[in-house]
Amino acid sequence: MTPGKEYTLKSTYRKYFGGLCALLLALAIATPLFAAEKPAMTSGQAPAVTVSTPLAKPDPGGIATGGVADIAGSSANAPTREEIDRAGKSEPLAVKLADVIGHNRISINFAWTLVCGFLVMFMQVGFALVETGLCRAKNASHTMAMNMMIYCIGILGFWACGFAIQMGGVGGLPTLGGGQVLNGEFSFSLFGKSFGLFGTKGFFLSGGAYDMAVFAAFLFQMVFMDTAATIPTGAMAERFKFSAFCIYGFLMAGLIYPLFANWVWGGGWLSALGANFGLGHGHVDFAGSSVVHMTGGVCALAGVLALGPRIGKFAKDGSARPIPGHHIPMAITGTLILAFGWFGFNTGSTLAGTDLRIGVVAVNTMLASAAGAFSAMLCMWIKYGKPDLTMSANGLLAGLVAITAPCAFVNSVAAVGIGLFAGVLCCVSVFFFERIVKIDDPVGAISVHGACGAWGVLALGLFADGTYGNGFNNVKGMVKGLFYGDSGQFFAQCIGTLTNIIYVFAISYTIFRLIDLTIGMRVSPEVELEGLDRPEVAVEAYPDFNQRKTSF
Image (cartoon, rainbow, N blue to C red; front, side, top):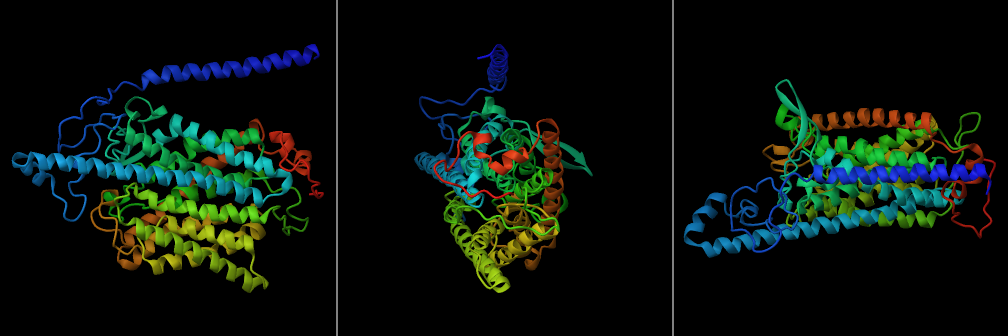
């Protein structure tokens, strides 16, 4: 080894070692700083039965969580809090049994939420297969690497600050029997109303956030964030520099996604449009058509505009050239895995296995996916004389994306209609962005998740039938759409949709441009033509195969 190379290597080691030491020091300092609140009892006998509202104290052992208070008003014929108090004087044993029932109820919700979260995590496999299958063989390892590492990077970013920004001011997780420690929301007053912007509790899941309900919520919310973060990797595949991708991953998990998620799911200002201004129940998104899918789709649009099309995608006259994927069976397998995982995505958003609406949610999810695939197949069949398998797969995903927001609030007929429209919208949107806007999206992520995510949110504002959602976002009454008498709900959905487009695009494009100006977003033309596998991630996906490589 030459002296120059040895010096460079030593400098590199010093730099990374110093960064690692700084990270460990920061964690060592952060842990006691965020550990100011005293946890609840974690061992010994359980506390005495109480019907009072749980205090904002962490319960890491789950001993003090779930009790008689959690059955009051839990069903149509459940006893009220006053009735339980009266019974406690003459029938103390009955109250103790009710305490056990309440604990079991919370336990069922815990198991349900975690299992559904595991299903959503498995969707990462589906995304990896879809995106890799629709890309060329020379970039297969690189695409797989992005799909694997966005999961790992996303977990760390969301753990450090993303979860706190999103859920730090939610005020409680009733179905999980706790979470009152998440009571810090940064807000400002306007027109005499409070507008929540971001949470302030739960950084590093430390201190008061060391609570079993908070940890369960973290897992479920993390896999949702990971879904949003994965979407842009497909749109920017085959030319996205891996180092730039890593920076994007941390910023998506720690800033871009959590802010909008707070506004809708964390007690932020969009969720309060109903309570503050009488616009239905505020912006409602049951499982993430806007929070997850629109955020991913709009971010993907910003990234593709900053990155530019793949070499050779567009001819000199502006016409688009097809660049087929290398493994269609892989992509279809991934699509079916996503469809399976989506049952956890939508039904799990109840955060309660004791909420019997999960049956309606599951069936609506299934119907919309079938309708989306069918209408996309017919659309391509009518236009080109043959059904397009990849477009049918995207139609299935489009139906799933569109039903994600309204799945709990609509009937089966509306679910099929939402899916049918989503399948056609997906086809039209793909051609629009490719042929009119001249955007190169190898997997159709902008159309599937962005356009159809917006349609799903608006569809809720049209078709919500008033049979579910009493008290949603602290508004009395059931959620109703425009066609069922509540124009305010549709208006709130429009506000949320426009907010997502403006906010997510602005912050994402700014971040991508800053990355491009510093370390660069795109690989060199030589690397792009040769393939990103070996230059970017060191390992070729198919080293023993003779790959066909074109001039573009």
